[in-house]
Length: 227
Image 1 (cartoon, rainbow, N blue to C red):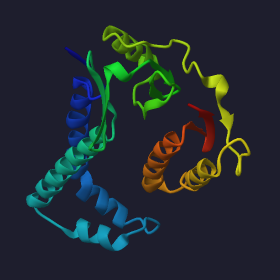
Image 2: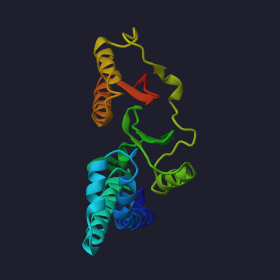
Image 3: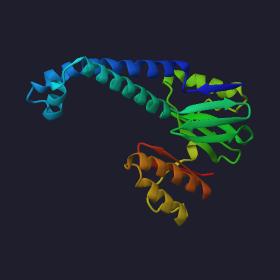
Image 4: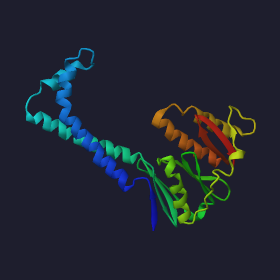
């Protein structure tokens, strides 16, 4: 028996039913839109618009509709892949997103809780086993807690039981060893680097954990505590 959060049947129906239909409609009206826009001198890309507006024949509408349909399906697939899927069983928790999967065995989890929009799992030493941002609405948060409880995971209703131990990181923090400061300094530079920065933030968080510290981010600021 398993419980899945994210990637629900409704999500798939909305994405793969709605976006291709929107693409189909846009494809149908594209020649007319291009014809109108080509006559508005303030609209950019006049060259491509005039080219599309100059196409004639029923096949133009058909081609545009097919392209719109395929484009909508592609966007739906990308959106679904970018949504966190959490599979909870009595044996493990699996987080899947962007073709990457993190699996945490049940016996390692001592505490589970929500920290804002993130699902966090801790072991018995308070070390983080996982910290993943979910895509559910705020009103659906109780369903996440209920799913973990249903499979016997120790859930903290009050959020992070170690919240009071966190301190904001400042460069060359005197209470941290040089190695941890160096990693946190490198992390601080990754906040504005888009997808590459997100990957670096995750990787360097794991490096901090190996040094005996837990780090979390809030509004592009780092907060740390010892494990």
